[in-house]
Image (cartoon, rainbow, N blue to C red; front, side):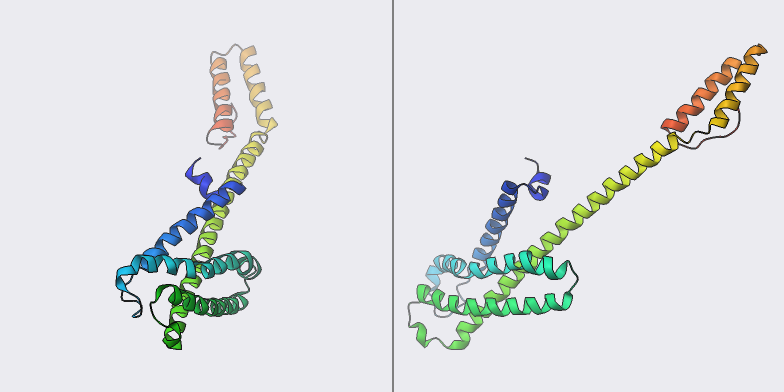
Length: 228
């Protein structure tokens, strides 16, 4: 399987592999950026790696929601139809939904990770954690849209090249059938007259006509209408 096929093939199996590769890479990134002992004061720094894994499990669902909402709804219904105001408002609404989701996931994350009474943690700290991870979800959505747009741009470019190639071949075929019969008839009549007159250059004129036709059909397509 080539890299090109993996990236651009519409085959269902390869599409699934692309999505798995995307989420694997994004999960690794999310896990690594969650390794921050000083991020939340209530957490014990010695357990930072387990906290990062818990953070991944708690906040990845909002990212998944944002990505597939962007690809399945916002892209086909708003971006492709150039309804940019609705696209902006939809992103704003999606961001609000992600923040709302992640607020409750923040409470769950703190309950799983914090050796303290979560109820004693102020609302603003829990909301901020949800807000920051809501931003991560929206960024994931933008990233997915960027990949989709880049992929479509490549398809568009390849299709234009293919159509240009077909146009060139069509023009060549049309040029091949546009050889003027008058030129051929006059040239052949001249050659026949030279042969009957037993002129020594008759054979050279036949070769010259053959060369001109070959260049016309297979090389520069610029036909010299001078009679042989």
